[in-house]
Image (cartoon, rainbow, N blue to C red; front, side, top):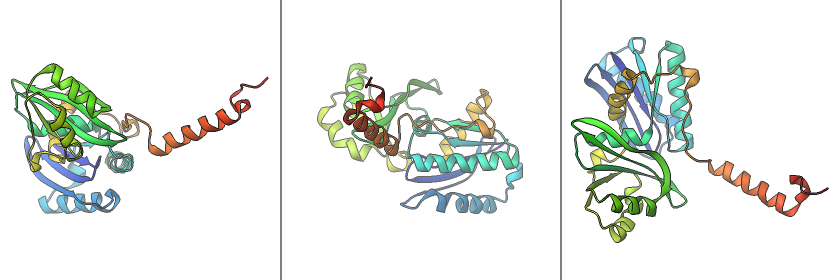
Length: 247
């Protein structure tokens, strides 16, 4: 089996090729360039470097969110385009699951933190039991305070990782009582290699979909949508007749 993985949920842009149980290619950058500039050139270079052919790809794994709204749309469009053109199934992998999978084998709790702005993080709780990946709490958008409180209640050693760590590390150090540590840089961000391996597992579990059926999971409204709703609420407050309040 040859599986292609595409990761664009945050600042990291990453593509990988997994041949059966061998990661034969991975190209990752973490720089402030738009994914529309990086993903396809990276993919083309990786394919040529390993001498593969996209026609031989059996499935495509893509990070389906949460994360950057623009990044997720670009990743989904790239995966959908390839899936439809090549007639291949897609595996939408939850972003936070794939980040946690970087820490394969640890018996500690794994707590990814993605900075969701507005004093929130995208997070989840994971661990490995006898080498099997376990989702203790699926990905969600919550405050960092709620995360720390929950982990203190559980009282188990935990490893934090993700782009939310540098944003909220001071808060964690000040408020958290439970034993904790932070993943090293080479394991702390999104990687298409981890996405590919987890995607292969989800494919074997029957989670693949057709290209037209892949939908990003944003977990919350975009800033533009939130601002639109606020404007509508303000207009309705100023003129109740617009909301049907007048007789």
